[in-house]
Image: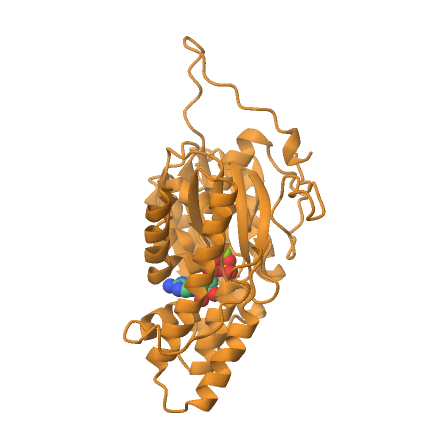
Length: 374
Ligand code: ADP
Ligand code: MG
């Protein structure tokens, strides 16, 4: 089934039977280095959200070590799930029956060993509790993060999805309906933050480290390039990264604060300019940020100012919902369960999965993608 086959949702008629209480979903997220579980109800209310970060484990290596991540998920996930159920006021596996109505887990994209741990545990719990399993696309999960905090959205939205592995500008025509408007041609925005932070010796993860270092710096100290700022909606960060390296070599006395602030400003400028151009061109009814980089304070402030100037509402997930978490996975899973049905237990983990797209804009190689439906 393609996304364009979806039937519209019928509005509730006066006098229609009252729908059953919103189903409770357990969400599980283990695509990279966060072990997370959450309970969300079908109305999108977060009953609990537990995230156990492996940052300390990987910091010594300057980045995520896939094998270590998988092993850590294996030991952390069971207690994290138990804590999420407990904090939601739900009994664990007991004679009382299933504590939730469905179990959703990220099945891709991500690290294969890490994905397998979360997806297998979710399938096992679904089987044991005799409830549906829902395999969720991690990128779609990020798109649902802002929806958790905002109920009154108008469509279409332009979504800037910026994480460690992906950078995309999307038209979101409604929940589950995405068109790709632009994407990075090389590094993801978060990857650029991580690499520049590593080069400057600021530590891992790089995004928060750069933001902290930049707080005392001059964003105008270096005029770093804003690649393709005025052409198209695709993004590129590898030239910026090289410019930072060259500037530091030419100016060994430059402070980390000035370099970090100037780099961050260049990323923010490009992301704001391109996203706002996409939003006015569409035209969009609002702008939404998603993914780990959307936790960046100066980026959030710049978007607030730009949207204010353009008269467009800005939908920002809380900082905790920008970085990887399971509440967004459960929310996407709840929508998916209602509109596409459960996923087969044979749904594979897919490390290279793309966001399920509606038909792409004309001229960009129209592709209708499919997703497994039970
Ligand atoms: P993934 O890429 O695995 O989906 P996330 O969505 O959590 O993970 O995004 C992680 C990325 O977000 C990392 O590259 C990290 O450096 C970046 N990031 C996190 N917080 C910030 C921040 N405050 N400023 C800039 N980048 C950030
Ligand atoms: Mg992510």
